[in-house]
Amino acid sequence: MSSSSWHLGTLRQWHWVSSAVCLVGLALFSFTGITLNHAASIPTTPRVQEVEAVVPAAVLAQVEAPEAAEAPLPAPLLDWLSAELDLHPRNSAQAEWDDGEVYLALPRPGGDAWLSIDLESGELFYERTDRGWISYLNDLHKGRDTGVAWRWFIDVFAVACFVFSITGLLLLQRDARNRPMTWPSVALGLVIPLVLVILFIH
Image: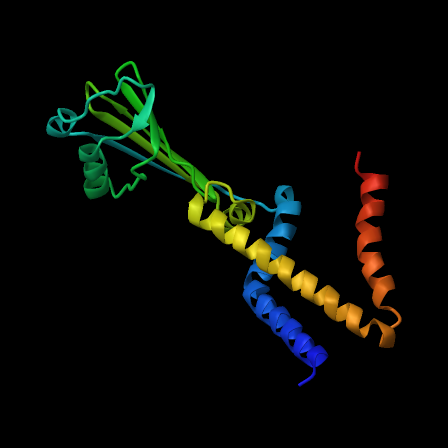
């Protein structure tokens, strides 16, 4: 096998592997690009869930307000929330402690949530808003409140897309002699967004 044939085979292999890795992600990000662009035109009816409860005195007795204004909820309280209300805040989630009350924001893709607890009476109020699956997918696209694992996925996906693009460009370069519209088509992909930016985005 000649060196050029080996390089071509390797290039094609990198191209199809990266395209396979990107396939579902590209479809998702393309779809959510459209839904984000027309977010104001897509009707949504947020669903709001509210829960009122009282934290038992035995649990409150194990809760000590920290000196810092922000600190995670203590383990006994997290265990009670999980067992009794099926709420599972992250252990590292920072709550706001102020004047005998603790407030915890629980942002999530496609909605929002929060809870507050009166540390004297034990009164708890929890509210969760769900804006639907379109909003959920849009937030995945933006990486909004998705956590570390999803942000890493976006980074790896972006690298795979870059490999897909560069290997595609090298393959285009190889075949450009036999396809005269290759470089005009590539240039068009650059010129169209550039013209739109210059003329219509202020």
